[in-house]
Amino acid sequence: MKKGIVYYTDNRLDGTPIGKTVQEQLLRCTRDMEIVSVSLKPIDFGQNISLSLERGYLSMFTQILTGLIANSADVVFLTEHDVLYHPIHFQFDPPDPSTYYYNENTWKLRANDGQALFYYCKQTLGLCAYRELLIEHYEKRLARIKADGRYDYAIGFEPGCHRPPRGIDYYKAVGYMAKYPNIDIRHGKNLTPSRWSQDQFRNKNSCLGWEWSDDIPGWGITKGRFNEFLEGLGREVEYVAT
Image 1: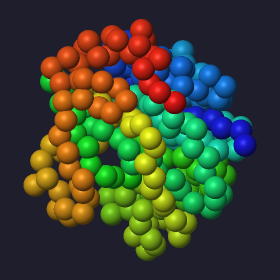
Image 2 (image 1 turned 30 degrees about the horizontal axis):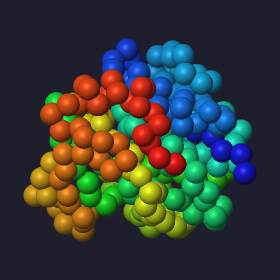
Image 3 (image 1 turned 60 degrees about the vertical axis):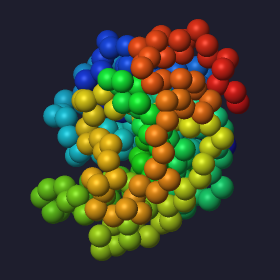
Image 4 (image 1 turned 45 degrees about the horizontal axis):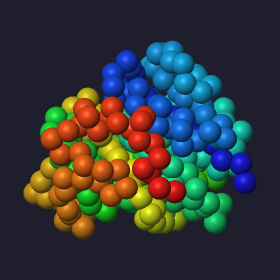
């Protein structure tokens, strides 16, 4: 089974400590994997494809599909420019070619104060599946948006999490918990909104397992030392046990 990653970015973090650290961590985690990056401006990261598009959800879906088509791997992990991935995330082997798999072990990390938050959720940032399945999904997703003339939030972002007619297809979405988490950095320029209160969720089942913490398992203390935490990742890469 050949594995690869599709890395997509809107270039908002180019040249920033967050952007640099995320890319460095990805390179450490995926030494033997094919990397295709799809950006809105040229970047030096893996095999880069730059698209002349405006930032937005439609552009994000287009970037993902472009990267999937360009990648030659059997299994692809979708990765984002503001997520720190743990090496163990890429050790997962999806058993079923017709299922979407979501690593739900992801902590939100608030950049302005280092506060960490966990709740169970399936997100594209934790998605992996067989490449052909993902290509089929995103081709259908983009075709539907084109036919509707707009993106309808009702179809959601995550493949497999909604059934037609609301969703795109009938393939299953399965969640799992890797031994150590990934970190979703919330920095104020994220494409999707941040939610720091359970009152912001219409459906409370969407934020089960709600837990605040000053540190993130397998990564260390983040509260009150976000910048120091980022700076230490390159020096302390051995702390991320695999």
